[in-house]
Amino acid sequence: MNSRTLTLISFIETHSQEDIPLSKLATISGLSRGHVCHLFKTDIGLSPARYVVTIKMREAGKLLSTSQMSVKQVMIQMGYTDKSLFVRHFRRVYSVCPSEYRYQASMAS
Image 1: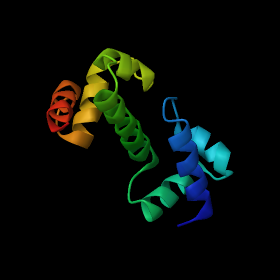
Image 2: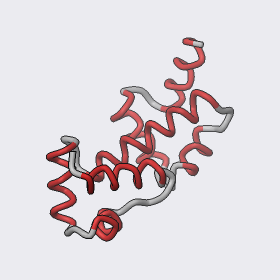
Image 3: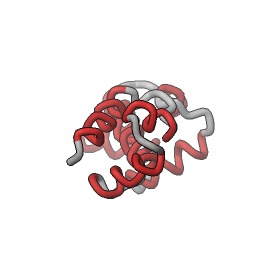
């Protein structure tokens, strides 16, 4: 895996609660936006945007299963202002809505 990709992955994981536009990733890596997209597709198999969403939803899943935060609080914590977008992204990763995910996690414990 390319060292620049690893640097970007580390940045995304560290800043998962922030808005991370492609232009910011390009600036951090010193590459063009197109080259950043190419690196992600080659090294990870996802676009940068899809990877950011996946990391955000992974963090949201952790919060839902380990905290008493409401779904709305988790949504805000992850940098979302649109609940329907948050739920859509969450379903794309986990195949269930956030409240169902929390319920399933509580039943598994």
